[in-house]
Image (cartoon, rainbow over all chains, first blue to last red; front, side, top):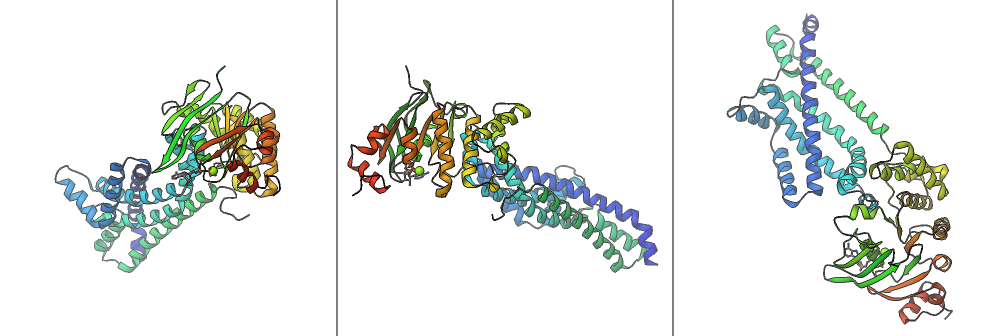
Length: 221
Length: 246
Ligand SMILES: Nc1ncnc2c1ncn2[C@@H]1O[C@H](COP(=O)(O)OP(=O)(O)O)[C@@H](O)[C@H]1O
Ligand SMILES: [Mg+2]
């Protein structure tokens, strides 16, 4: 019975899911750190840094994920031996950097100019003003759009199987080919797993957004 | 004795238009001077040059004999506080934390000390009961009083005000003006751009009238309001409803 097969293989499916989640967390972390750095460089940096940021965004948003994965695994692998997992983190993480920097740039620029001015006027340096005043406001506004990025990157992790990362989708194919199992049911279970992770992640992010909402802000009095 | 604040021959252009054409003024410790003049005359630009939010093209600003430069500007700004027309309270911070953040990040004060100081300043502007409110939960007049408290907490030598009441509904200007009057009485040194004639009469040592990027005249308020020397000043006073009835 197909359900026995599923139950027998649940440990593999959960193993695959765990790999997918690790990949997701790693690539989002890369994208978060580099994305903020890139956004700051684009908003506050000297002109060459701005150009670099724009070029980076264009390039990494313009190439399909699969091509990036292949490029980083096989292309980079020609010069420097690299495992599938780190190659996937790099490829998807740099792509996420491009999307996240766009999110962060938008919310940084949306902080009213007067906020920076007031911070400078009490004697903060530009860096102190960015750290203490601009970023705390911008990051609150970023949670909403960042939730979309979370969802789309979760889905993108399923592509890492093309370079041999044994994540959830890859496990599904193993199960099907080793048991001649029912493709529909196996993938339905996998779909459900993605759905649940996505749902939980979104809930957590909404919770974060509510928790850090500025009292009274955006309400009409 | 040297003046507390000396502004000497400030010039400033935006593109090809010269907005400040050599402005000088000075304040002794404890003095309050009110700058008046029509819109677009360069009053805001002058204040922004004083604490270098806009650096002047030429001229000097000295506080207690020390020139304000790019190198010392962050330190000097703690001594030359600025109150904005539209308050610019930090939106993500409560009234109290708008005040503590400068004390904590710049003065490295402990959390408890900063909190105590903040509450004292809020009390001084009559907002003890609003410490936990966020800017968008406060009226314009309350926000401006918090922003004055934020400025005072840094123990500035001079307070600059750029039209502190002109973004407020008329019924809210009184609470801000009365806070400013009590500061003047307490001996704060203040340079105030404002068209509040009542405030100028009661609190100012002098009115400075600016026109077209120049200081046209400086006189004690009584003298300025009753007998301005320049036609431009007379026209201005008529325009704001203060000239002798035509
Ligand atoms: N950042 C700026 N860039 C270009 N022009 C400016 C800038 N700030 C002020 N100006 C111009 O300088 C002149 C004086 O402005 P301002 O100092 O705001 O006058 P006031 O405060 O007396 O109304 C105005 O013509 C204004 O348009
Ligand atoms: Mg102005």
